Image 1 (cartoon, rainbow, N blue to C red):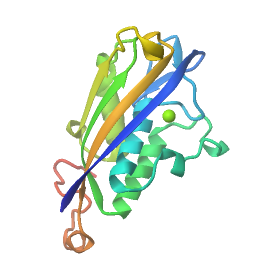
Image 2 (spheres, protein in one colour):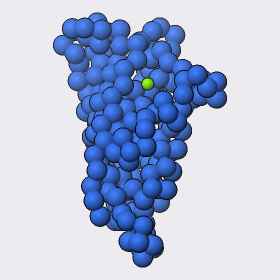
Image 3 (spheres, rainbow, N blue to C red):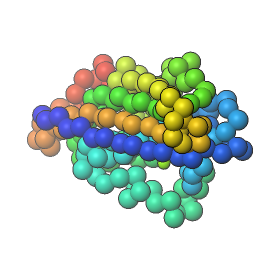
Image 4 (tube, helix red, strand yellow):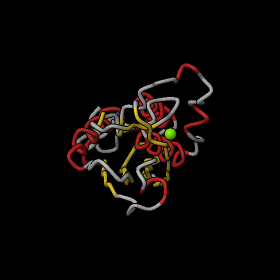
Length: 180
Ligand code: MG
């Protein structure tokens, strides 16, 4: 078994009249991300981190914003699709660490719900997902409340096909940690 890491980043402008979707959860606020889909920066950066670790391109490769099919899409669908691609390539998600950057509102109270939604989409345990939030100290577009950004690092375990064939629990090397 080998371990691989992937990094993901995303940024969306914020505008009035849009829902603030983060990690599959609607956070009450007067602005939300502008985007072809629901503009969920956490889901998008996470999707890129997973695809990057697996060597499978990026979110734009799989869900082009020119495709009307994805207009207004719930970004958790992207994660479910990415998870299926990882399964096909014999990758298991080991750990996810994320930082969401926005000036307001406070995200901490919403983290449990976000972790639950993300864990369900990826079929991992909630303790395999760690979320953090920061402000941008009032500087640049994020600091002025004009944008939201997110960075994610994902760690995958790669299991050779021969090993996977011997294991009835693959792609979850530890079924207790990875309920399916
Ligand atoms: Mg995006």
